[in-house]
Structure formats: structure tokens, C-alpha cells
Length: 267
Image (cartoon, rainbow, N blue to C red; front, side):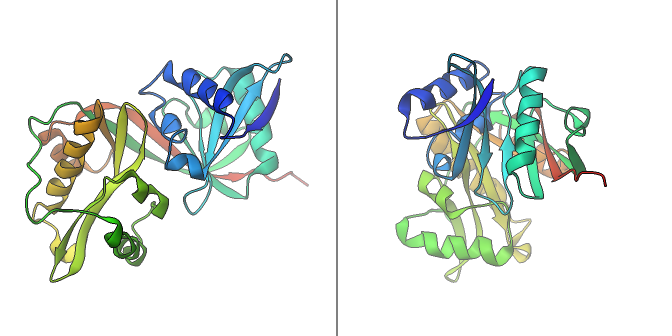
């Protein structure tokens, strides 16, 4: 077996990856999101090919954040996983993180130093019954707003975000006297769903329901076009989880984000 980078312009190989990931659609929601624009523009796709050059599996390195994010598919067998870990050691910088809805620390610690693990709950909503109506003060962004929104996230250090994600068109914001004080949008999308992200409210404007209004407005627009709206919330953030459940979101399963270093050769 051999790992080779896949050219996203090769529509046949790209569709093969989408087909493989779609066998476990929700479990691979982030992986699939990286196979569609806008995130496709920031993704390196690597296929695992057999001796006859048929793709058996694949993974993605997303380069849109401050360090590379490796997204692995669910149900990857041990042979493929070992091959991927060996390969990643040769190409990754010293620091990176790995996103998985399946693996645990023991699956990765043989090759990587795990600095810490953050666990988020993946939540989904399918209908708009409990979502709030998108009313004032929520405004839908237009092209002329994107520079201001980008500056808002940069100034507040509300990571992770990347300006290319604005291309999804789902961003909404709230302002006070011409100043953006709250904003939110999506991290990625695919044909069936979009993932809500970057919901951020300035400290002085919290406890006014702005986060609830933004989440509802974004989710409503997603559900006008797709089957599901999804989001991640840290498992320790009980108030946020309760808020999303109030809006109709249901718990799906945890996602683990491992912050890693490459293991150095022992001298």
C-alpha cells in the first residue's frame, strides 16, 4: 500500500473519497466538509492506494488554522492507521492536532506526544420548531461586511477561524452603534449539512441572548437549504450545551481534538 496526495482537480479521485466517507456520513461530517468548498481550498487530501492503484482509504490535513489539523475517517483498520501515522511523522511540523470521533489516546501515543485532549460534543438539529426567528438585531452579512467580520475575529482572537470560510454565505452579526459586538457563521458544509461555528459575543454584551439569536438565525438558514445543522460544544460547557438543547439540538457523539507533537528520536 502507498500513500499519495490527491489532486482536488481530479474529480474521479475526489468523488471516490466522498463516496468512501459517505458510508458513515455523520461520523465523517468534518472529513466530508473538507472535501467541499470552501474548506476544500485549504485541504490536502491523501489517499491510501493498493498495488493496483485503487483507493482503499484516505485522510485530510486541513491547513486553515494556526497549525495543521489532521482529520481521520472512522472505521480505519489498524494497518491503514499505522501506515498513516508513519507517513505523518515524515511531513508534519512539530506541532499539530488530530480530530477524531473514534480514536483514543492509546491509538496515537505510539507515534505522537499527546499534550492534551479537548472533548467536544457533536450536536445536530433537523427542524426549525424551537429555533428563534431571525429578527433585529441580527443582520446577515454581505460582501461589504466581510473585512469588518474578519477584523472582529482577529481582534478578539476567537480561534479557530479562517476568512475563506466566509464564502459559505452563512455569516450573521449583531452591532452596536456601528461596531460588531457578536458574530457567527459556519466552519464547513457538504451537500447534507453545515457546521455552525465561530459564535462569539464580546464580553460586555453577553447575557443578552445574542448567542441564542445568532445560532438560531444561522441554523434556520442552513435548514432552508440542507437536511441538518450541526455544531461542536465543549463537553464541560454545560450552559452552552443546555442552550443548544433548548433550541432543539440533540447530542450525537463526542469528538476528540488531540494537541500533539511529533516524537523525537531518542539519542
